[in-house]
Image: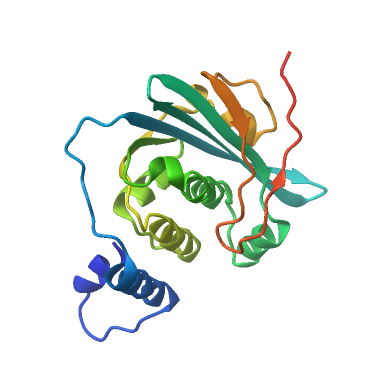
Length: 219
């Protein structure tokens, strides 16, 4: 989508870091990426992903956390995977220094990108549903671009994570119906099917391992 927006521009075009990153992704796919394949057989498995983010203040500083849940059905059985992590303080501070007054949007988009990277083995070339409860994140993921530089940097990472494309659909879910709200706030009170495993993702921007949240069970 970043490159498509360039095609509709008029006059002199100056390539910034996001446009250059988009061209790098395109070059990577053309040179060494696998061919796009859409299976015609009935899929043997399906995946549903829910993500969410939270932003609170402690001692005047923003503390941002993310959560995600994957429900995966394969060969007649369900399994559930999830993550519950704290975002890197340095990244949150960088966004704040860039003038971001409302951090919840990029935090929720960050959770989507982390989930796509983390669960690539379940999502690559598979049919998958992504559910988010933030209207702006939903619109950005569908369009693949944004006027905001922080959002665009995250969308470039989402595109990179989708190098082996999933056959996906991104939809909005009302916040009260989003089960990933629980792990994003350090709660283990969410529904699961079959086995339930906790994963430990890395930051989609720096590659550092994200700090896990201590999970508590709501009474």
